[in-house]
Amino acid sequence: MRGLLPSWGQHTAAITRPSEITVATWSPCNRFIAITCDRVETIDVLDSVTLQKLQTLNPQQELWASRAFLVLVFSPDSRILTSLGSLDGKRSFESWDLQTGDEAGIIRWESSYGMKRGEDLTITYSANGKMIGVRCQGDNVILIFDIASATQMHSYSTANSIVPTNDIWAHEESFRFTTVDPKTITIWEVGFTSDAGPTRVEILPAPENIDFGHPKMDMYIKFLPDPCRLALSFWDQVTVWDVQNSKSLLRCNSISVPKLMHFSSDGRLFACSTRGSEIYAWKESPTGYTLHGVPEHEPHSMTVFSPNGEWNVALGGSAMRLWRTNSFTTPPSGFNLPSRSRIPLPHGFPPQFFS
Image 1: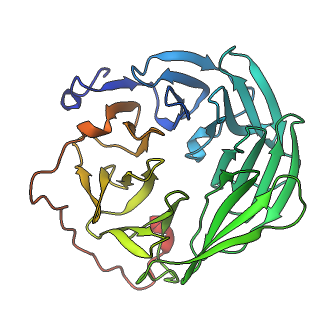
Image 2: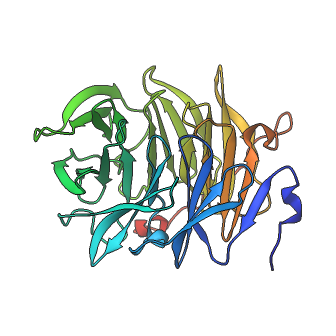
C-alpha cells in the first residue's frame, strides 16, 4: 500500500520509502533533511519544506543505518554532509559537498575504538568546521579527527558515569561532554591540539529523588547545553531537570516505556517517543513544560525538531511526516496523559528485556 494515511491531513508533507526510515537529520540552516533507510545503502537529501528529494548520495562505505540512530551530521555551514559507516572492516567517515554533489573525502579510523557491534556513538563538528568529535559510549573515550588531513588526532579517556551518557558538543576551540552520578552532573572539556586529558569545567547538582543506582533500571538520558537541561526517561517516567537552577521542569509518570527524547535547540520544545510508538510533545511555560501535543493513531518511532524549533519530523516505519510545531494537536482543557498500571516484575527478571 502506498500513499498518505487519511488522518495525517493536508497541512503537512509526508513521504514513504520501500523500507524503514532509520535516520533523519536536520541541517543547521533548517533547509535540508538527510535520511537513510534500513538495508538501503544510499542517503537522500530532502527539501525540508516539501520533503522532495534534492540529491541521492551513494556511499562507498557500509552505512550501518539499522544499528545506530545517529549516523549523519551536517557541517556548521550546512554545506558538508558526513556519514558514519564501515570501510574495509574499519569505521570510517565519508563526506559530500552538497553544493557540487561531489565526495569531499573519507576518514578511516586508526584505532579500534568504537568498533563494538551495536555501540552507540555521537558525532559532532567543531564550531569552525575543521574537526570532528566522536564520543564512544562503550569504550568511554572521546576521539578527535582533523578533516583536512583525514587523520585521527587524539583519543581521550572519559570518567565513568552511572547513567550511560552519549553527548558531545562544540564549544569555541574545544569539545564538551557530561558524566552523571547519583549526586552530580559534571561538564568536561577537551581541546583540539593538546594531549592533556579532559578538564572539569563545572559540577552541578543532579535531579532529586532519582535512583540512579537501581540494578534493573534501563535509563535513557539527553543533555542540552544551552539552556542547561537534563532529560531522563525510565520505566514509565520522563523527567526534565533545569540544571542551572536545580529545579524540575517536567515529571510525568504515566507514559508506557519512554525511550528516545529530543529538545529543540533553544529548549523551548521537548518530545519523547515510547516503545509503543507514541510521541508526546511539551512546550516551555513559566511553570515548566506543559503538554503541547497528544499521540496520534499512527505509530511513530522517533521525532526530531528543526534547529529553529518551527518544524518537526516524525518517523514511523517506512513513512516520514512533517508539520509545523504550532500546528500540533492541542490537548483539550483538563487533558491528562492516560494512567498506566504498573505490573510487578517477577523476582530476578532480566533487565535486558528493556534494553
